[in-house]
Length: 227
Image (cartoon, rainbow, N blue to C red; front, top):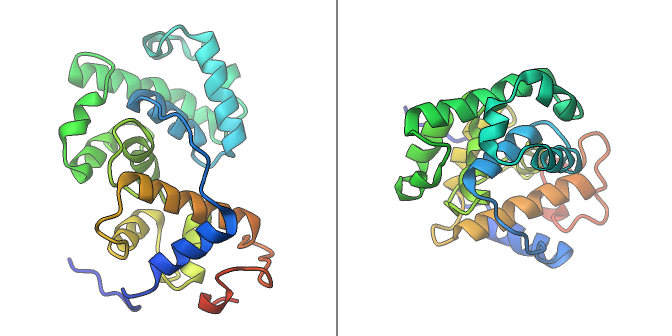
């Protein structure tokens, strides 16, 4: 079914991107993880602050020699390590179940085969795994060494996009990805999409906050319908 959009697709997404880039500077370089490692980090990071999910991810790296060991470990060995993340009681079940599902379906714990798949097919396959939704699937294919053209839309990004009238107010994250991708330049690479998400997320954290947005210094103030 074709979605009816009550807003213009000519909104200046590129202008927004350039203004945020001028305000915050380019995001720092970082090392891309293999897709299985990114799956684990992104699953931990769902609804969890980045510093906490990275701390738990590092603890898992120290505790388990490889991800096969994590996959096969009893829940009692993982539960104390995952306790700091949000919804830990669910993630301690989802995480090994997702790793087992990959192994059962592919014969080994590896996701590099997705590099040859169309991005939406790759994301669809990932979203059949326990605990993997649209945001996590986009993070796996975009942030990892797969480097696919997918836009991660977290709560900060979603809030900023709605306030800028890039999305209808009731849009959820799954639909937001599709609508925002239609507004982005077709020549933007996976790295460009990664940078755009990082800038929107940073803006949502620093100025365009949920409860008390700081509007006076906002570089997007004249574009914002919610100011």
